[in-house]
Length: 513
Ligand code: GAP
Image (cartoon, rainbow, N blue to C red; front, side, top):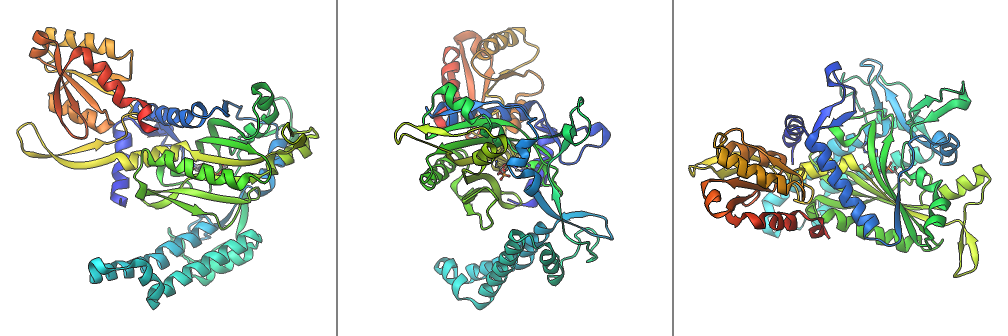
């Protein structure tokens, strides 16, 4: 996947009503996006797939929908007031603000690892089928040098960040001679911490006391409701609480379309376990979540990435990364959060937040393993993986190019399009409408009679509709239609009475499990 593919993806999202820039008439609002008609359908289907996998398929996981606003003490207890910061640095000439850690990471990727990759590719061509990449990486002095350099820089960055040694992060930027991507200047300010939470003011209380935050993660709504949910659903440990909802972060650098937004949606699940059993459940969720991704994405586009630098609440953490058009990046996080959050809320609220375990006749603060995925990132991954340009034979048997969204049928925004062969033949359109009115009770359907049939097929391909049904003159005689399958382009004659069953079976989420 390339930069070019990414550009096409962004314009496809706009042209076909998946995603629009927020407040576009006012030239947009940076890193905030609106989902259009097909985008919101696809997003809802991704949510449904997640909810089914996490809540419906697990007897011991229940869902909630907590408010975005929470008592401000929540964020003190969680550590977000004191520690939810990114190190920022400004360029004095361009006046552009950057994340200092990202400047260093990008340097490592572009200036160091890219060179190693180039050497490896050259060798691969030279040695052909006999090439052993692992052996080459550990024996070729030049490649070893690049990899060692990347490791040294990354370790130093992580150590400086962990020790909050921002002066050393600045030193590192200077030593590596990193220049502002905009101005090319190396005239930098000091590195400072920047809190990522948005805040607002409660109308009835003036000053600090009325300061509210927009939640930067949905997880805290789950933690503060732990006892409410456990008691009302009589769950026994281990059990989980799941939630889908908006989160807000004042990202310093928000870019790459919907990859990093200031307002986004998370799908999070906190799994409460007996202390000491967190490692076992961490492994369980690591596998389970990868399987969920692999049902819709190719295995080679996914990988694990263990965290070197752990967040303040974690004793183990990893990302499931996806190969986006701009490289492998975090799609989902799996975090073993210990008893940090429940313990902190217990302490600050003064209320006992514990589970009485009847098996050992003891109360304790449970440990937590969290799975946390950004819905918008999952949307981007799904689109990036599915959007394809390919050459296919047209109606006259000549080659033509089509843009097709090969999204899994269970996630497709529209499942079936109903197309009368001709627009101005009332007998065809009324028969098509009759079929459409029946099918729309079962799944998302679209009726389309405008333009030649080939163009209508292409429109449906572009939004990922897995099936097109064409009603022609034979349909009036024998109650059959042509069903066209999006990916294979195979056309088959089937009975009108069978359409519902055939399409329903193929678009059912069952096929993802
Ligand atoms: N409760 C844990 C938590 O929030 P995180 O790694 O900060 O962990 C979890 O975020 C997921 O949320 C990420 O893997 C990513 O998919 C998504 N995410 C985080 N920040 C985002 C942003 N600014 N825009 C879009 N998605 C974001």
